[in-house]
Length: 604
Ligand code: ATP
Ligand code: MG
Image 1: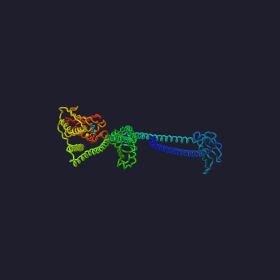
Image 2 (image 1 turned 45 degrees about the vertical axis):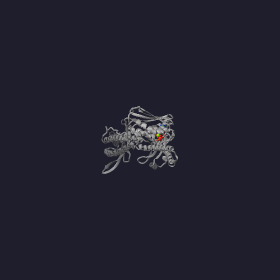
Image 3 (image 1 turned 90 degrees about the vertical axis):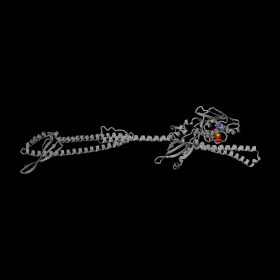
Image 4 (image 1 turned 30 degrees about the horizontal axis):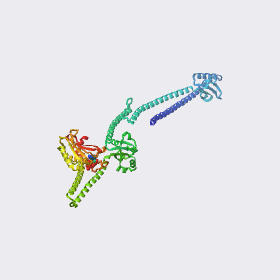
């Protein structure tokens, strides 16, 4: 990543370098062109100078030798030549020739070194005019050393080079410094943008040492960064709030919720689900839900999740997969439904877990109840039909005692039937909450005595005896007399039902340990109730018989007792029992129920 960035930055530098190279080439070319041009001009001027010099010398030498004797010519030319050569370092040699190209005089012999320096050689004819006729009498050849030309040329070239080099250096420096300055400022901005891109909203750049457009850019950047920071904070607050809200909602849903992603990993599990699955977040998060085992090591979800995945999504969407799993004797209904993102992509599934142990138990008890009731109803109805039929057809054949006995049975069975029907009616009435419980202040003793009396027949059948132990001066208590009679009736009938022949039943009425209550209890010496059933026997339809006892019944009696005492009288029910030793059922009634908060208020 970084390498790439560096390369992309150097592209800009590359351009600058390219510009520099091109401008260098241009400057060099310009310099070369200028120097060559100047040198050429100098050499042309030098050539001209050589020719002028030669011509002048030719004219001059003709002039000075015109009137000189032939034998003196040599010395004249020699003297003249010497004076010229000595006065001018440029001249390497001078040579005079006659018309036949014989050398008259040459300075080469006297100045051999200088002659060897000659680089430019020019010749001019020597002309004499006699009577208007011009004739060539010889020629002059001048050799020029070219030193000054070379000197000028070098100096010019060097100065030009210096000028161009200095100009190039200055130009390059300006470009480089400018580039560095701009790059530095761009780097500052680049640093800032990088920070923002990593999420450091609110990061500010230092605008000092910058000005102009870069300054404006940095100010704008700082402004943008500040706004982003503000926006981020608002957004994060909002998101956190939303998330917390969602999480709180999810976490406090009473049903269990497990969310799995596309790869079956658990990504979310609420408190209820943790409890139901007897696990905790740390254990189960990011594990595959198929691998979840109950306490007996059974894979609860594996098969169903596979079934879910094999079913087309649109079917699952409309009809989620429902099944029951059992974890540690609890029955948990599980519903798997697919989960989609906003853009309708499949992202995983949600498992909702509902504890249906109670419902399943009640279902079971309900079906038991129905079979019990039908059985219970059939017995008295059959007995009644048989007895009534017999009496109807043959009453004349029987004596009065037999008839009376038959009527007794009919009466008893009818009463049993009535009790059962009453119980069922009471139950549905109480369950629907549709009852008006009127209460009056009453002493409970007469109510107990009355009930004992009505149960006497039933007790005698089993030869069971009652004894009533009553505390004197029991305070009066507000009560619904028929309700309390029903309670006593149920407790006593149970005591008789579950007592052996000749059993003894003790009924106590006293002030409770908490003096705000009176307590009534019914103690028998019957079969007792195993510990694990004791908590449940007050539930509707619950019967120990289905598991341990064998006596028939509907399972409604104690439920009616509980509702009447707790709901209608704000009292309490209790049971103490040991299998094969006996049971004590009882209840406490508040003397001042108005001081006791309602059940609903208590929960709040
Ligand atoms: P119903 O009273 O409606 O005819 P039931 O007696 O079976 O039917 P409940 O009175 O609600 O129902 O009692 C619930 C269960 O509690 C009974 O099935 C019985 O097993 C147990 N039980 C109640 N009283 C006693 C008792 N005194 N001794 C032993 N077990 C009892
Ligand atoms: Mg009963």
